[in-house]
Image (cartoon, rainbow, N blue to C red; front, top):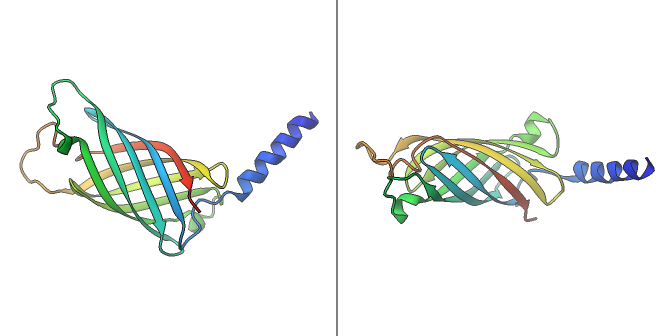
Length: 164
């Protein structure tokens, strides 16, 4: 019983010290997977804090698993986005370990938005979940299946690391 109590106290110490967004100069690296119609992608990115609640960054996705019958070249599988986030964890005041971040992105394929959340278990490691949707696609023509890979609703999840 004493051993269990010590482990619980040690873990709670880590959880109390974890902080999801520390403001100006904060740096987060994340890697995960994205799910969407007809493709699954690997996603990675970096966010950098500009102010108390503002961060900018980039993310990149590459579709690894494209549905049979879809002829997707590299240009269809790859996407790169510049991102702007409003980090609202301290505004919502739920926990120092938890952050919610709505944001906008400008990519090679579209202009879109995202809503994500991060939870840190330790000061350096956490998990994230995010959904994204395009607001405006660069092409007004009817997109074929390969062109729709990064032009639709996506759901992502993975690991996030604090680089500070």
